[in-house]
Image: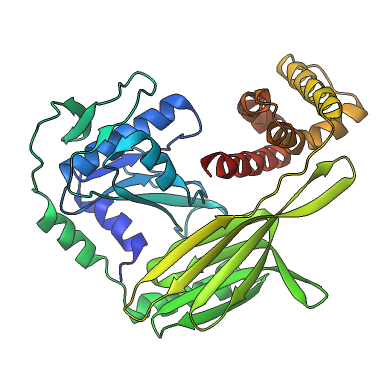
Length: 378
């Protein structure tokens, strides 16, 4: 079993960017250019490593390998994106790796890419890359190559050695459990469970009971053996269920217009632990977005756009406008879910404005964009 934090450290300590490893300060797959560059690197790494894993480490400064972290990213449908744009797509996973020195909510992203042994190519045009293009790694650069080039296995031994040095042990697991419960989440209700005598899942959060059900807010869930953060949110509510073989979460999001706020189930994730030392993660989007009168939503969309215009021009908002601003992320999301495509672009426009204006509303906007991304990828 590989400790992913050790794997990241080994990649950063012993390797410059090369044909099986790349590092990024951040990736941005929410807009066309960032999505295209990400797919290009995935394609190149898959073609350059037909027999072994390759990796992209996200949240690292390029010049000095300083680990600065990125926001927690829990998009379980990233494989859908790769399948949609690449022929012979590799298997791909994105995992959130906690590091002790990073601030709350920040992690290092680890993208693991496993080729299917065939030449991977862009399926269709995206940004400035044409459908049919094939990419390979030359050193630290992803370059287009002729389609009939032969796939060569040159990195298996190096990657095997790196992964071997990142294997977990009992001391690391125990230290991880103690640190999670006693240090990082001493102010929250914490718990743990061992599955199949191998896997340790820890979770923490504020709890509240509604009837016979327990709900968690400010939730953090980690698979300690692999140092992988499975779930993190400061805003949503989550219910947790487990038996001898599975650990599952059901995430709820709060949405509504004005004071009419309700909780809606968003996504159910189930981890099934197997006797052979492996586990499977299955996610199902169960979200049914609320529907509202289109005239009302058109008015709200115009109000939101006006608020952004005023903030851009540094015009002081009236008290009623400040109250509307708090609901702007949610109402933009509701508008998009009810067919107003413009709302997505406006949410992107709002990011830098709200980041400078109000950090709490900015965090709410990031949550709304996360929900939007999940719905779109499904």
